[in-house]
Length: 281
Length: 134
Image (cartoon, rainbow over all chains, first blue to last red):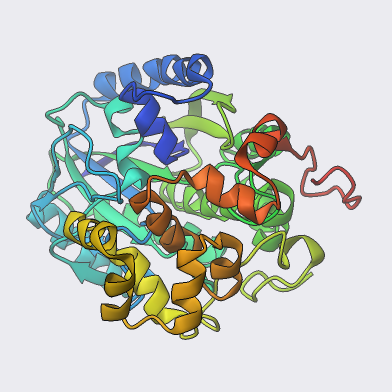
């Protein structure tokens, strides 16, 4: 059976990618550099763990899916997922390789457990993954990816409880993969931000740190908090934090927080947490 | 407070503070949103740059929608049912920043908005007092 090594929750935002690439005119570069420096220990932890596969729960931002057909959950089944052009061209990084046998095993397990995901053979991946990907891995990417997209574009979006349960079901699917699979589970979204309306630019670093404190061992407290209230106090797009519940749901209770970091570089709270499985010998 | 799957209707999540896009609005500005999303394609961006009106007519936008695009009325486009992630692609195609689009929604210029950013709330989930939210 495949081994789940641990989970990572991490924020994403287009500006993170632009700042990483050193594009001209990015404000607050000094704070972005602090974020990149803050991710260095995560990159080292990943390298130490030597994963072969990475399951990523993310959300597309109308860059692959459009409004003609919008899947609540979609799973990338192919051996290659290119980077999406979001309207400003692509960044100088390769597409993401996949492992079709691994993906099929997980997908079959999920459908068997009642999670009816939409199968995708030509996903294109946007900043939901690409904004942090080069911070955690060096290209060419040394792992195979299994991307799973959750609808965060149009209400009703999947509930926190459903995302938590999806993570638990993915854990079951990972267990059915090949013995030599060493799997890392990454959820990405948030943290506090609102990118439209008259509250544009709203952040809540206090809430972000509270969320980072609770996710490992008091996740039920977060799950019991209505997402509409989180959207009020931390910005509408903080709703993406629900995807972190999938990462936590995939992990056992035998975990330790290997690392966490938070900063607000500009108008999006940027946080990361690394939760490592510590199975009893 | 609404249940978490309802379109939120509290003061802070009601327009103009927030426009929460739901399946209930999706049909209303469908062509406008699809046109905007199409601008992720470099060819569509070039066609739009060459002749804005013609590109919008091909996409089937109505007169009011074309007028709002021409006027760069970002607030109107969102209020009409535009999805912010779609509408900003029109802005990108015109070399206009997301922040400038949102400054319009805040009723000010980007130069006026910039020093106010980031806005900050310090509320936690068990705080019932809403004061402190911008």
